[in-house]
Amino acid sequence: MFTLQPPKLIQLENILFRRLKDYRFSDTYYRIQHGFLGELKFSNIFKVSHDHLELFNINIDIAGYQFEVDRLIITGESIYVFDVKHYALPCREEVEYWSNKFNSFKSPMPQFRMMKDGFSVYVDYHQLSHRLECKMVFINEHFYIDRKTEDMLYFKDIAPLFSVIKQERIAGNFERAIQNHLFSLHRPIEQYNLRPLFNIMDVQRGVICEICAKPIDLRVTTKRLVMCDACGNAKTKEKWIQHTLIELALLLNRPFTAKEAYKWTGRSNRHITKRVLDKYFEKIDDHYILNEV
Image 1 (spheres, rainbow, N blue to C red):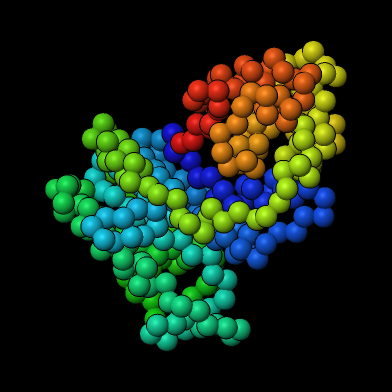
Image 2: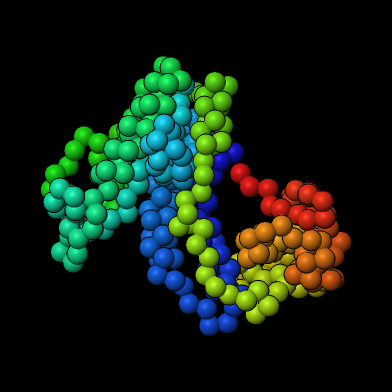
């Protein structure tokens, strides 16, 4: 199942903020985080049936058209492609630029047209019978622009479209093949892989709560669930270790050995760590890599 996940830069800097003393978020973090919160809002409010298929944040190149899709929905009848914008202030269109009362920025329309044209080529090339709908979604309730086009959806326009989507035929095996093929074309966007400079030796090791950053001692109970006594976050011991190893994989950005994993999670958690590595990570020679969807 494909789900919306924070960009890796967001995940990495959140880890560093919890585990590294006096860490400060980068300017890029705030910019990407703002966009991601808009995508998350769109996904959480406007849901689709489990019988319809979705993809999130795929970056693909089709016949020279390179573009990112924030959210894609495939039904048995249609393919919906969304470019999600989290702009807060009203804007004016000035050909190559948009402006609000504070500043101006490059118009997003050329990128949107690239996405729309690229997907049109994809549908035509594969001779798909699905109807193609490409929309730029403004997820902030108070946003408007002086020159709205039919490709744009204000917040109030989204619900009627999703009412239509929910009435469409369910996706079948053919649609799943389309979904998998599009995902196979995905290549990560370079800016999302920008990594802040840090020394891994300075980063706090061990199991810590991802909500409040309190260290978690898995030895204190024999019960199935271990709860953070500060914020109430509860997980099985296996899930605590899995999350801790995912953080290690993101920090290192490379395959790692079992020895490195034991050192990271703590020697007392060695047996659980080995079980989690074998269950959730792919082993190549003597190194483990994170299985990603």
